[in-house]
Amino acid sequence: MDALLSWLFSSEEEELYVLDCLAYLMAFMAVCTFVTLLFENVPYGRYATSKYGFPVNARLAWFIQELPAILVPLCLVVWTSSAKTSLLPNQLLIAMYFCHYVQRSLIYPFLIRGGKPTPFASFALAIVFCMYNGYMQVRYLSHYAEYPAHWVTHPCFIAGSVLWLFGWLVNVHSDHILRNLRKPGETGYKIPTGGMFEYVSGANFLGEITEWAGFALAGHSVHSSAFAIFTTVVLASRAVAHHKWYLAKFEDYPKHRKALIPFLF
Image 1: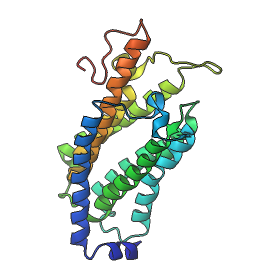
Image 2: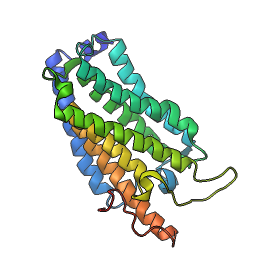
Image 3: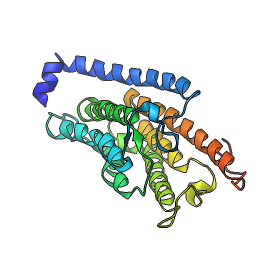
Image 4: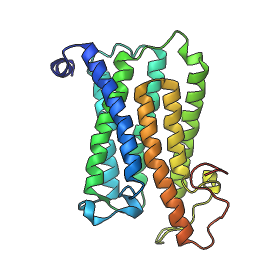
């Protein structure tokens, strides 16, 4: 793996420059995605459509598309000279990243009950994004990120870590609620209740947005910030679309419930 990176980059300075460029590109992509999502929903799940390619089984799609987010970083940590992985802040941030994606790729797909197929275009783009982001996040953290002494006791790291954990728990719990809405043999959509769904329609999205916002605060880098911004753009749009869909679908949908931010929005 070191040989491949040496072939791709003439120096560590060049690779770090590329990593920075990838982060700024992701932030720019977030802006473009925001504009696009004003006119169309992300085409998977209940918004899937055949114009974006043939359908891929939901379980298979989630497993395969998220797997590069584990495999690429794992190769970087195990098979490269990861100069910073002995440092506690870097270890904890990498652990946060892996904790999310182990759950998302190796556990979540196999708990899905039914699930609408994913259009191939969305599936393929997700694979590319997971490779892109996995390399950017973990290569920076494992080889380049330098933090002040005692960074783990800094208010930004502590607050970010707490936010990350809260978001991760909300995300996992909300997915559990959604999976168990229907009893065996039942079909159709139901109104989710319990947990953060009592306050917002997109509780699972709120959890993941909070998770990566905390990661960005604790990581204190343009790379983690760009990822948090991109995630917020995509998932906030999806939360708003879900909220409008629920209001149109169910006459008895709770009127006090917001789309994404409790009591506000």
